[in-house]
Amino acid sequence: MTVAYDVVAFYAALVLWSALLVWGFRRNDHRLFFGFGLALLLFLNLRYFVEGPPGAIAFFIGIYDVFDNIGLGQGETAPALATCAENACTVWGDRYANHPSWGVAFYERFASGPTLRTNLLRAHIGFNTVAFILMHVQLLGPAAMKRRSTHKIVGRISFAAITAGTFCAVWLASEHGAVPEYGGFAAELGFYSMSAFVYGTVLIALRAIRRGEAAEHRKWMIRWAGSMWGAFWLFRVLLVVTGPLLRNYESASLLISIWLSAPLGIAIAEYLRLRMARRRTSVVKKTTLPAMVGAR
Image (cartoon, rainbow, N blue to C red; front, top):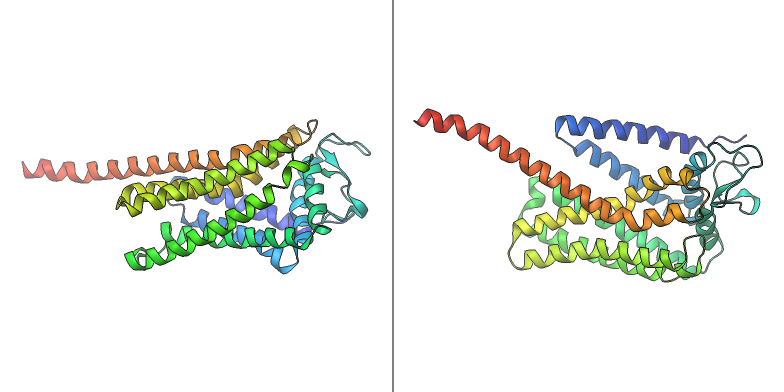
């Protein structure tokens, strides 16, 4: 039986990443968590350019094969699972014959689809990856990146990248209504909604800075970051959790991820922003109160 050691290594990396999340909350310092998350994102996305979409998608499906087959006996299947020709849509060889049906459709659409569709996928992934990284450079980067001139240049590049990436995403989504394994028209609308959350937050941030409202700009940039993290990472985490639970309902798991990941990401980002603001206020009170008492 084939063992997908690269998937096993990815699981180990996720465990370490989870530990960094806990450590970050205890220390109120999330830089290691964000940095490790960016490294994992690059690991997943660069595969589409190094080994091509079919190989990258087979690895992606392999991540979910383990969870979606939990509790299934030999020869058992479920409405949300499907098989693919010669089991080529996974990196697990013949270990798992059943795969999430959305994953099989995803693989087949790019293993034998038109060149334009493949190029749109690569462009979407490439541009969104650039925007994702530059977003963190602006929010968490060194002081040199926060100078007005540098920040403005990086911001323009980031906005151009997310504009191109979103355009490709919407184009790709326009075909999803014809894919029942995705959820048909509900999936198409869901991807439009995801794009609206991602692009809408950055547009509001851009409008704020053009009005000279720096605080409002940063607020919406954090919300944009939340939408990006949600659309990428929460999307994938939700599939891990809901996939095995909703095996009897085709496309239900994927539709939940499509519709909820971006708004959930924004909500979490807003919670973290308010949490950091409260901590800063608390620190200011602790440092200024003794000084005021001493002055009396």
